[in-house]
Length: 94
Image (tube, rainbow, N blue to C red; front, side, top):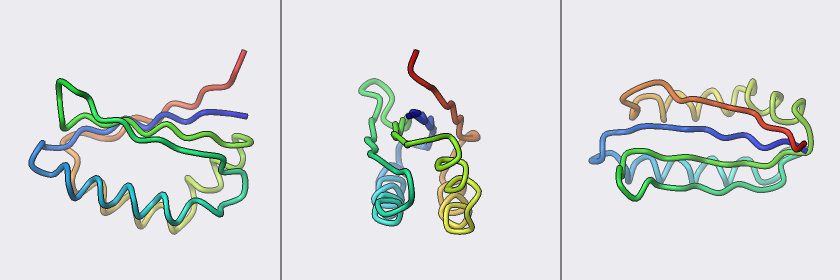
């Protein structure tokens, strides 16, 4: 099992469009192989700073989703809202 943390920064005026995109992605991802769960968090001191933490059965399952056309299309919509590139970190339990 792995956890993927995606960190994103948007202008605070674009929080609602980002939130809508995250909901849409979650609806698309729920039946993907290896997807277990995800949560979104908003920084209480910086409303434009968001983190999505997802749990996957394997790194391969995550990578398959990350490389998919479906995710790339969603990512293009999200990237239009970002003030700097998203940061993705993959963790495994120890």
